Length: 83
Image 1 (cartoon, one colour):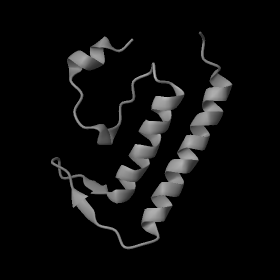
Image 2 (cartoon, one colour):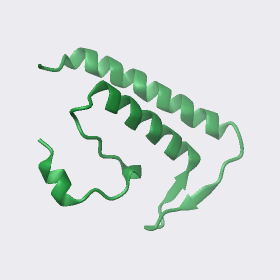
Image 3 (tube, one colour):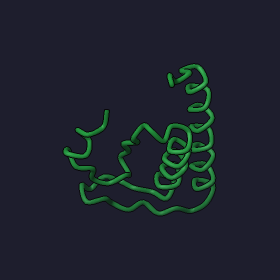
């Protein structure tokens, strides 16, 4: 079954808006910035938006893997199996 790209784009915009709302909720209060192993910053807002996006994309297109900065390491072997 082919994806309806217009509908997919519409749904992705809605997902991005929900992720943005999650970020703003965190930024309305005091929040902590921690450093990841590579010394890059990570906030609760990063994690909240990540959870919203990954969950929603997984429900919207379960057949398409999601690669995210906050997902952690995914081996090259696994990524090569994605089609």
